[in-house]
Length: 303
Image (cartoon, rainbow, N blue to C red; front, side):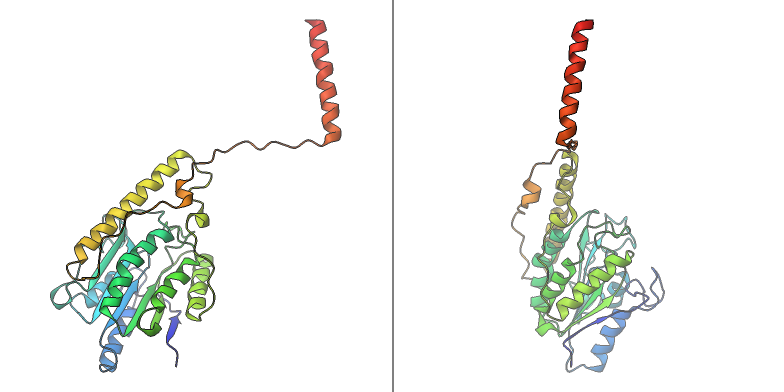
């Protein structure tokens, strides 16, 4: 028997609510699977963690379990103060009734965030809470519209980063992990991302995780882009601290992160774009110099 699996399912499901379809989603695949496990195997499966890293908030999964303390729903999604579809997923949405504190929304405040930003959420929210919750099974709503090159998500996460995120989750609950495909609009980037997740599940060696080297967000960019990147980092760090402040009343493991250190690419000054010099073959260079010298002599004589 396998400890983990990747379900390539279509259509996706995390937007589907109990009483309506939306966002290309007809049935909420992960929510149905989670409820099925809880009902069919009550002695073996008492607690389930669902992590949703699709760039859109999984409003359907949240609604299905918002009053249920047996399912912890965590979502990393682009939010932009409610201006990004489906316009839900504020940090203050923490669940209700018995499920209060078992919904953790981790919004991304702007586009063009990368693997380092996602890792900050993993290291300071997802993993500490997951260890404290100690789920029997982990589901991942694995959407890849946050991958570099997806025009809908607008994020800068390279495909191989998802293999590293998967490996982090495999360190929990003896690696009992089920991943289900959600959104993604760049088929090449989506397939690359899925490949790295499956490689991670199989225990294959992963390529090293780099940050700004992968998307060149700093290299050969003007000063203005450096400033914009700094503003994005500041906005993200503010959101990260806000999430922790809201959730630490429910989870004793959460601590405020240390101040973020800039990467070497972030510290590097912007490179100026210089015009490439055309190299002239030596045999032509001599003729050109002779012609120029002749022109100068003629200019002196006529002057």
